[in-house]
Image 1 (tube, rainbow, N blue to C red):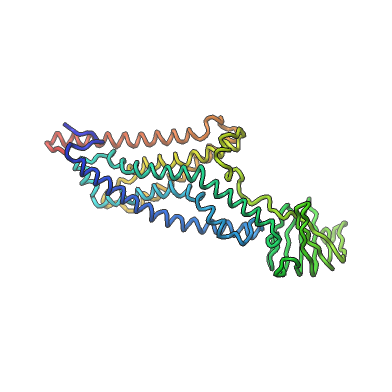
Image 2 (cartoon, rainbow, N blue to C red; image 1 turned 135 degrees about the horizontal axis):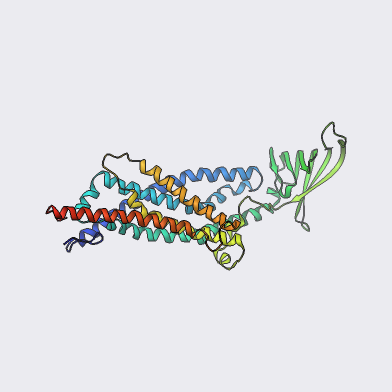
Length: 383
């Protein structure tokens, strides 16, 4: 009598538990290494993005490290599914190449048994992914946004830095100062360029002072002994005027940091909102644990390889699969927001299609396993 693909003959359960722990340990070690490598790559992208925002005056320079640190949980929501898939392919793929999986299969360790240690570890990973998506990542974005607003209220980071072109808040123009005094109260060699509706204004001055208008919450830059140029040379409305004093006012709080404000909203607030954008953000967060779970379920099938098969060919397939799946989820979310698809359908049709792929892959694997065992039984070999 043949044992089912999910059960071992009596007396081998102890060995089964040891094999489960062995497989789980291999995947865990591979996961830690993969996540470290992926995180180092993503940190470079985060650093570039934050530096770009600092250069445009959207993020104060003093918040460089804190902004990167607070955005790591958000990056982990993208890295955890991909890292888990690659870790399983590395761990299980090595076992297939070293013929350890063949030995386990000959001992009655069926395909479903290779899935069990993944489900235990995957359960923890799914809970971690849900915590990151629903609470930790939005909280990090919320704290990061508050830090930017609070820091930008100080005069020291009102958009003025020595020797740097800065885009002022509120579309007030691009400002350059060659030197800012240590007390952040005076500046030297100032140039301001504004362009609105095709009209260009250029202000230059030798010195200036900084004041704060608490009533309007604006920074007032008072320029002394300068020149104002309106328009372009050769145009009829071109003017060039010298002035003794001129005031420039702009908001001291940057209203747009370049991030989607809905991503920093609490999940509880999204549940209670009825607007399309909030529902779309909620769909994005709900999809992340589902993506991780389905990728982990399919990973043992993808990890199967012959002893002489190239080691990293499955990695390319895994990355392409991850990108296709996540991009389809994002595309479905955009279609739901734009009204191309019904809002109630959301992104669930993508997950349903992927579930069908997983069921088909496991169905073929279990069918092949049963046929192989029946063939061995006909030859008088009892696995």
